[in-house]
Image (tube, rainbow, N blue to C red; front, side):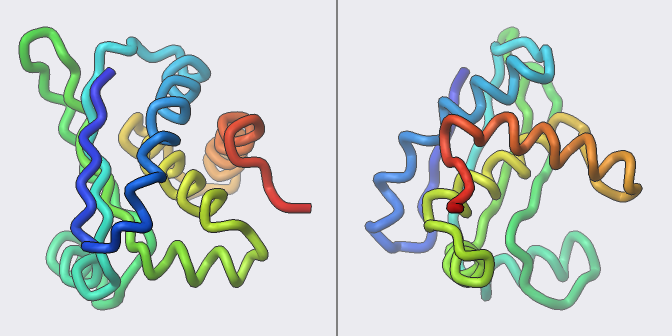
Length: 147
């Protein structure tokens, strides 16, 4: 398992959050019965940057919280899952809106992105129930919801 953590937000406060990436990916791969010989990138940006990506790649002209770009190539036997891009502004906004800690919202968006890279989606009620159920199982021990 290799995780590239790229903090393009230029905010040093996010450096300490790197420690959550591996436990989340490990549990995600275990629960989805996926081979752990993978590589993924997690990139932190601001709303302005994710807005441009959302517009250019999805034709949606507004910022979003997380984008997942699947790769699925294989290099030297390593399955390249792809890239996850997360807005630090959305982490802050959504943590406040949902009454979560920054850690919980960061971990939630990372988990959400990992699952999208593995082919999970939430376009139908059934798919949403499956994906969100997996998210809760993954996050239960790592970043439980505030009660």
